[in-house]
Image (cartoon, rainbow over the protein chains, first blue to last red):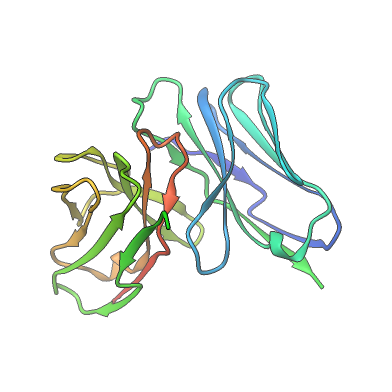
Length: 113
Length: 113
């Protein structure tokens, strides 16, 4: 089936550093969503994007819906230990029915002591 | 408290022994879904349901069944589990469409020997 290419697969950073990750596809998306999964728990929605070019913030997190509608970016500023986890992008394809979204494979964020 | 509950949280079983993983939500959500999470593969949708008595296949439905007799419950049934169904399973619900915020359950870790 259709896939989202999420990168990087994993990141090792120092506390305080900024983080950037992205998702790309060869297809056009109507909606982009960013979820975070803490260890041992289910994913939780961080940011939802509904318009091309949209830039939305949630605290230290900022996400953008790419202008081509084929990509999205998530940035985390001044990382802290509780940012550790897996970040997933998810999206709804332009021509899919309203009941179908797909997830990327995730970016695992590690913060070095 | 608004939540999605799954039971059991952990299950070890043998090949061919039928099992059911229950999922319940108390938010009066119409949309419910099952995902499996495997290392390197991210979240893959198994089945979803737009409303009572309405279910449809996701990306990896083989070997699974679901039912939606009541709005709040969406059990996942493995009629004859096999080792390749060893995985971490998540149930999720959202108000109407999956592009609404999906609330995920805590996960069920299934091992089939």
